[in-house]
Image (cartoon, rainbow, N blue to C red; front, side, top):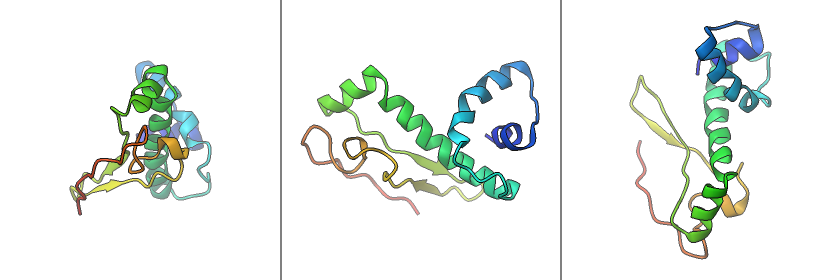
Length: 116
């Protein structure tokens, strides 16, 4: 993920296979302030990429179908490698029918453990 802000905000180039992966990530960075420090850009980019990936999954016919059936709940999280902490993302960026924790198909959402 570290390469994506480098490409987007500093014009870095990467190997061709990595470049193809980065091209898929770059749209997730559109709302990030380019004047942030590289460390803050990276933090924002990681979260934006998780939210982007969640939206991409939910926009597929399969994702919509599984959610409508009530057999899928999508939860975004970020693992901090240095501490081992996992931060579950709030779902306010997703439309209400796509928000984890609010249930799917009229069913209550399953509880999920919280980690500190």
